[in-house]
Every structure is written in C-alpha cells, then in structure tokens.
Length: 123
Image (tube, rainbow, N blue to C red):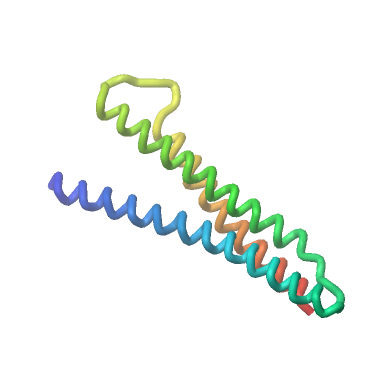
C-alpha cells in the first residue's frame, strides 16, 4: 500500500511540473508571438492593432505561474519539515498548496483571457 501511495505522489509531482511548463510556455510563447506579429505589422507601415491588454494578460499569466511555482516549492519544503519534525506552526502546508493551485488557475485564466482579447483585436 505504501508503494502505491508513493508512486501516486510522484506522479502528482510530475503532473504539476508539466502543468507549470504548459502555463509558462503558453503565456510566454503567446507574448513572444504577439511581439513578433506586431513587429512584422509595424514594418509594413499598416495600422498596428492595440495589443496592450492581451500582452498584459500574458505577462500576468507568466507572473502567476512563477508565484505558483514559489508556493509549490514552499509547500514541498513545509511538508519535508513536517515529516522531519512533529511540530505544528501557524502556516499549514495546505494554505501554501491552495495558494499555488489558485495562482496556477489564475495563470491559465490569464492565458485564455489574453488569447481571447488578441482574437478580438485582429481585423
């Protein structure tokens, strides 16, 4: 039973890492693609669409992903300390974990919002 629990825990860690990669790559890649598009349009002397809102959303998505990773790290550190010593503290690991989850979801929402706003601005 313990081996099954450990393997499940390892797979959750792997899935989390892949989720962070997806979020960072999605938001970062979208920001870079948007900048490349704007540079191409500006070079052709045609009107450049206002892409400040989508770019801001992608930047917020990258920041939220980064903060989510920090909270995920702090969660793991807290769990390690809880295993090593049987002490209780004011900050529970579940608070750190849920902060990470919420920030990760915010990162995905920012990506979706930025993508939608970019689509609306293309003519």
